[in-house]
Image 1 (cartoon, rainbow, N blue to C red):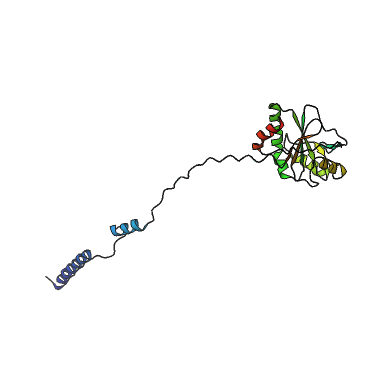
Image 2: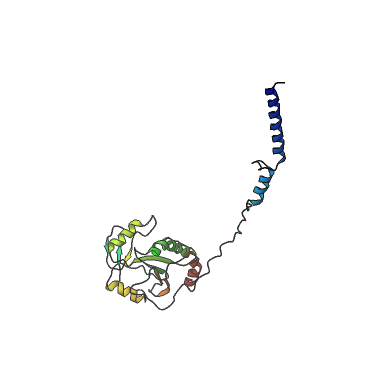
Length: 222
């Protein structure tokens, strides 16, 4: 055997010995080794399953205090102005007071957000009251300062909204109406006066109506 062959055999044997020793030594675990998996599983935060929140039915809104102020008030005998959708004025317009019928006077203004929001509700209440045996008619009364504000309000109304109304321009006419109904000179709109055929107040309401108010309104007018 030549010297070169003998050296090759020695090198091969040494390589095998090194490999055997390496296998016996606890070196760095591989990425697929169990030790890494155990560490990963023990240190990872567990994923919590979402807990469904209990469903609670919304509690009905409690009824508010007495809806109607039944104190002595009266509708002014001064005839207001009537304004149609085209802005045409009729001075001295007759307010529809009739025996055995109630008149629901709603005071509003173009700048009053709650007034706009409650108009469909007023119209719905009017029909419901009639169906429930209360003869009543709604009359909308504006206290806008400028007739252009009022006609602009008409233009923004949806189909079935307010397209004409009575109008109390600033001055003696408005002052007389507000004083007769014991309203402030600068009222906090909306306000409502429900009067009998003689113009005497049966129910005065301050503030916007809500759906929950219907039962109390019906009971007050029967």
